[in-house]
Length: 151
Image 1 (tube, rainbow, N blue to C red):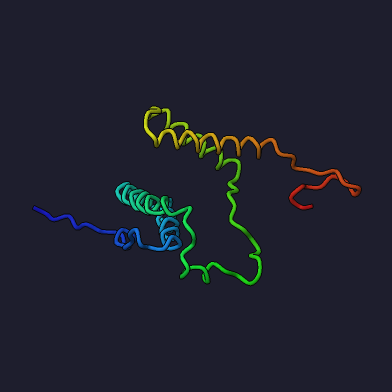
Image 2 (cartoon, rainbow, N blue to C red; image 1 turned 135 degrees about the vertical axis):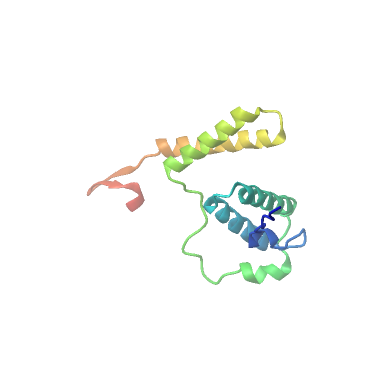
């Protein structure tokens, strides 16, 4: 009988627990999500989803707690950052996200708490999507019409 070697992705061995700093957990989520979208292996994808779920579950109860004193310095800057985090997918991606959530909900029903959260996310995404689609794109100025983003 042949033995099939099992390859374990290095990310599946990354240690973390409830005492792990929220910044580290958030970084793990980013790494897991990036690997998830780059992977074609269904088993690895499932394992990465589990890792993301575990990190988020550990993060959730701490979100409203004060920043631990040992992290204050690392989260302090002398000048404002040039950019700030924002959610700004292209309209085509946002539409795909909405479709994927709609199809997931349609396929699984609406009984669980997860479905309620997905329904809420879908609502928020669709409202954001609709607002983006309906938002003005040009501005009349004394020197003519200009793209709002360039003003």
